[in-house]
Length: 82
Length: 82
Image 1 (cartoon, rainbow over the protein chains, first blue to last red):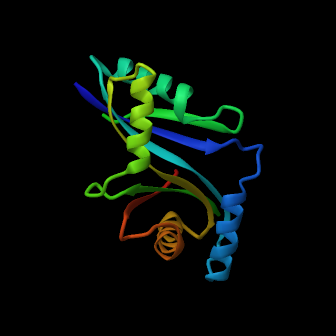
Image 2: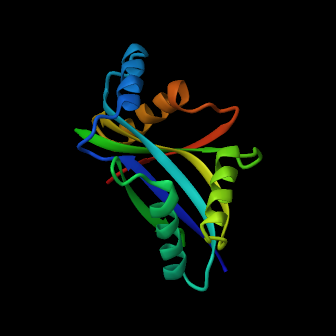
């Protein structure tokens, strides 16, 4: 069966996010000062062939650790869509 | 009150996602052939000051339309975290 895995990769909270800071400046210039912080990460969807959702999650986590996320600068979450 | 808005921006289904295709090739080389498709988008978290969650959502949607997403190539979803 094919499962859809959503991988969310965000910069670690402890680190500056210069791209997010730049976007926040742009939003201020557009009159959207109600937005106080912006952080920009990646959202990756994977179509995983697996026997069950636990197996799909472990394949998606392996892919994230091996290729998608940089653990020095990023944290990630993996969710399997039901 | 400050609400956390999650904005998910993905390439439109009708369009090729060359970055995703490149990652899929890399995963195949790593022995992760169980992953049949990869699509890569952005995940943006906004801290929004608003009176209620509907107002926070409309501010986040305005920001997404004005600055964050390109509707020619991307679709987006906005969720307010509870």
